[in-house]
Image (cartoon, rainbow, N blue to C red):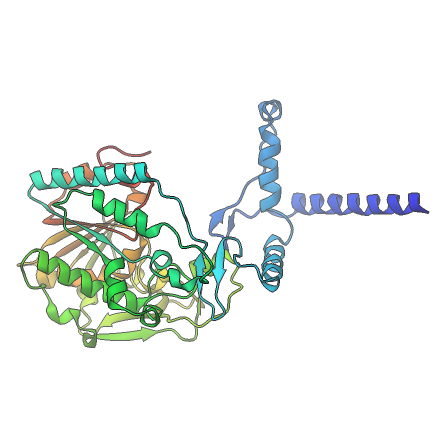
Length: 401
C-alpha cells in the first residue's frame, strides 16, 4: 500500500511538472511585466556552446520563473499570506495600516563613491565657471529618506542623512546648494508632510511639487540677488487644481506589490488660470510636440489608470520649453534632472525664457559637456532627489556607454 501511495505521489508530481512545461511551451511568452515594469526573460537559444558552458540552465531558470503559469496571481497570493502572518516587510516594502508604502531602509554608506561623484560635480562647476555660466545644486526631497517616520519605531533608520550630508559637504564650498530635505523637515510637521507625497508612489504629489517649486525659485532669485521673473506665478491662488477622482492611481511602490494596496490618492495637478501653458513651445529631443501630448496626459485621454508621469510629464532624454512671454529679458536654464523634476517641469518654465531638461539616465551615449558647449545657457541647475553612488550619472566629459 505504501509503495502504491509513493508511486501515486510521484506520478502526480511528474504530471504537474509535465502539464506546467506544456503550458509554458504552448502559451505565448510575455515580453514585459506591466506590474513590475520590466522585461521578462525570453527562451534561451539552443546552442551547443551554451550547454557546454552551463549557461543554458541559468537562462532557462530565469525564463521559467518569469513565464511561470499565473505568475502574478501566485505572487499576489504570496503577498497576502505574508501580510496575514504579520511580516514587517513585503518584498522589501513596508505597508502601514493606513496604506502608506515605503521601502526597507538602506544602510549602505559608499563614502568613496560618493566622494568621487561630488568631485565630478565640482569639476563641472569649475568648467562652467570658466564659461561664465552660473551653477547650482538642488537636492529635492525623496519620500523614502524624507519620511522615515512612516516606519515602526523598532526599525533602524537608514543611512540616508549620512549619505546626503557627506555628498553635500564634499562638493566645492563655493557651489550654491539647496538641501530641500532639510528645508522640508524644518518647515513641515509629519502630518503636513503626508499631504505632500503620494501614499503608494515614491514621488511627491502636486501639492509637494508646488511647495518645492516655490522654494527653488525663491532660492535661485536670492542667489542671484534678483526678483523672480514672475512673482505672481508663485502664488497658489494663480492656479486651478484639477483632479481625477474617478480614475485609479498606479503608484510605483504599489506596482511592485502587484497593486494589492487599496488606498485613496490625491490625483491632481496645478494649471495656471491664465492658461500660460498653452503658449509654450515644447520640443522633445529637438522635435516640436503639442502641450497636451507632454503635460497632464491623464486629463486628455480616456485611460482609467493614472500615473505620476501622466499627471505631469514623463522622463525624456531632452525636453525644452520656450516661454515667449519672457523672450525679451528671460534667462536660458539647463536643468540636469531625475524624475522628481517631472512634476516641476511646466511650473519652472514660467520663470525662464528657455527651460531645458536633460536626464543623464537617458543620455549615456553622449557627453554633457559637449551638449552644453553646443547650446547657449545662462545658468545650470543640477536637481537630483538624493545623492547616488551610481558614478555614471556624474560622468560629464565622456559617454558612459
